[in-house]
Amino acid sequence: MRITGLHAFPLRLKVVKPDYAANQSLGLPGSSTVIIRVSTDSGIAGLGEAAAGTAYFHQTMGGLLDWLRGYARVLEGTNPLDRIDAHRRMDRVSGAHPPACQPARAAIDLALHDIAGKAYGCPVYELLGGAYRTEFDLQTNLYEATPRRMASACRAFVRKGYCGLKVKVGNVVRNKGLSMESLRAEKAKLLAALRAVPDRIAVDADANQSWGSAKSVVRIIEELQRDRFYPNLSIEQPLHHLNLEGHRYIRDRVKIPVVLDESVLSPESMAQIVKHGAADRIVLKFNRVGGLGPARRIVAICESVGIGVSLDTMPFTLLGDTANAHLAATIRDAHPVDAEGFQWFADTPFRGGVDIRNGRVRLSRAPGLGVELDEKKLQAMTIAPEMWR
Image (cartoon, rainbow, N blue to C red; front, side):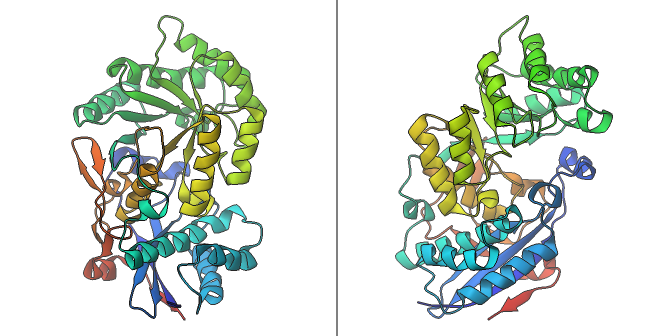
């Protein structure tokens, strides 16, 4: 089997999740993505997704297409089942894995896993080593701007059956600057969320690197926990992604888990997180680390030292969220999985994939990723397709 071409479909997606749409001006991941189809001489094709986000991935749609064009040249005529060789060839194009190349690289990796699963007649999670589970609790991201709206949204998702809530607590600081007043406004939203849900619901307070100094973070957490300890609370990425010592300082002084997200850039960065003792858990995005293969290496590091692993959407289309669930199936310890980002959009051009009901996400045993393109929808949603041979 040989690769004969790569077809790229840049998409514009209409956002329908109100709180997310309202925050697009704050530099959060945008509503653009590139879907790719890698063709082979056997007739089997694999699908991949490169989620675009200039502020988050330092990547534009044009940049993604440039990386994909370069990768297509070095992969033409190669064996799609040899993923190690594929990554070595992509190294020749992008060098030492600069962050901007990773979404495009991940899309290729995803498509090659899809091809292999179809060729071997097995789901992708079996290619990754097998499944601890194929049904998962769900997590969602909440961007509501006021304590009242945050509490209402939290209750609504718990009624839907969700067991994990990611409460965004960085917007006030970004809009008004870093001060104790801003941090206390963020604390008010977080406290409203915690009081609105039972302790069995996991609440991750996601500051997206915005909370400034480690001492300020410790002070705010101590204030929040003064009257009551919330065993379901974790603090996610309060400081800059390079500030591992600061996160270690926080971890040593607060009683809740410290979670790192933006710091997790590669297996090499994960090794540094372990070395500094900077995290109790991480948020892993295969799109940011170059694919399912690198993601599994990060999972192995975490499991060897007792660090938890959560998975988050970008938001992805149905394709990316289904890939997220395949990766989640291989992780030993169960944390709520965010695989519902595709529901933030009016539509995505796929059939099959994950099934979401009653706050749970389920994977089928369909070969590969178990997702197929709806060609009519794809044609309507594509900005301008590109084909490289």
